[in-house]
Image (cartoon, rainbow over all chains, first blue to last red; front, side, top):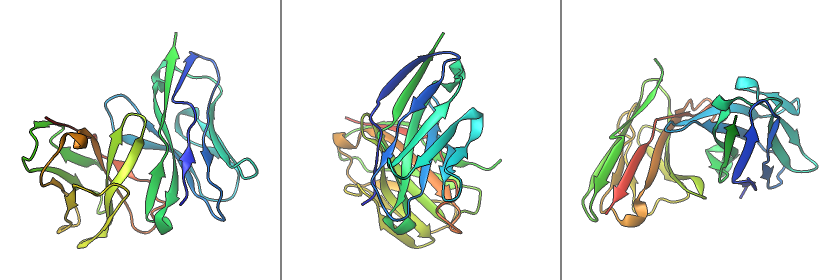
Length: 113
Length: 114
């Protein structure tokens, strides 16, 4: 079964600094990858997704991710973070024959002044 | 406004007392799903439904039931709750045109089973 691994449970960063949140997936012929964000006391919302085509995917709020097949990675990046980016970020992969998402364990991004 | 609503948002109960968490969406979505979120484990799918009267188990279905009698509603039933079901629960929905479509999540229901 396909899965994703988020190795960093917490990532502290100063405001206006760049950030990278790491996600690795188990290799497969076809893979569809997602990043979701969960702000405090809220449900999840989609940041971006990779289905096919360009390996650099741009999402909302200035985030982007790069699909790297050789390294089986889908890292999330932002060149300059803001306090409001403090949230938990989940990487996910489509599984179950395309019927469901399997999520990683999440990375807590804490942006400090 | 397009949204997924869950009720209640917070619930404290005791072991063995049956409870239902409701989920409703107003986007005419065919696909609906329930997840539980636990620290260090991320989100795990409990059950999902591809359409009315069509449901299937996710990764952690034990101790839960669901039903899909109407397109907009997908209640989660705990017949005999136990402390290990203390968790944060999310309902989600998306169009069946493709499950690659964005999933819309509800605000969550925090459950404590004593």
